[in-house]
Image 1: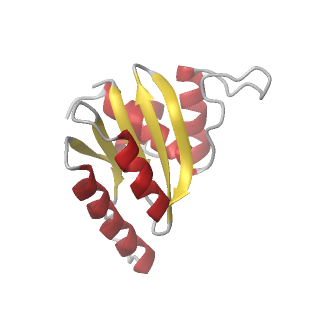
Image 2: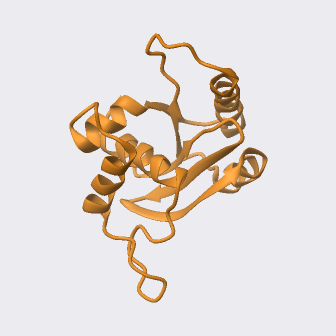
Image 3: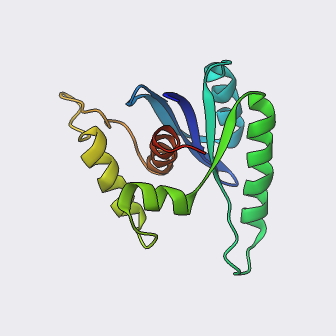
Length: 148
């Protein structure tokens, strides 16, 4: 699958990436209501929705985790097409070969794989990606390069 709309969901805002044929075509960090409109803009029958899924590791969680779970359900229902849940652990192992990897390690692995951000005058392949969109890109690359 090389045409993916990937999301790093959060309780109030989420990062997203449109990833096609190994390239980033669009990305952003949006409040969740705006993201629902973006989702409809990029939805098509041949595109996969890849969403970072919540996993339990035995620690207590709060309201934000449950709100994120509800939003994941809303995304999948609104997409109404092919989707894949991608766990953070899978992203870490795929990109960094370690489940101890941190966000910075994942970001660097993505830059090494896809190319640098560059500058406004000379934008690189990952130019414009920021904040939670990096996590969404990790989800997209992992979904594209691994099989279920």
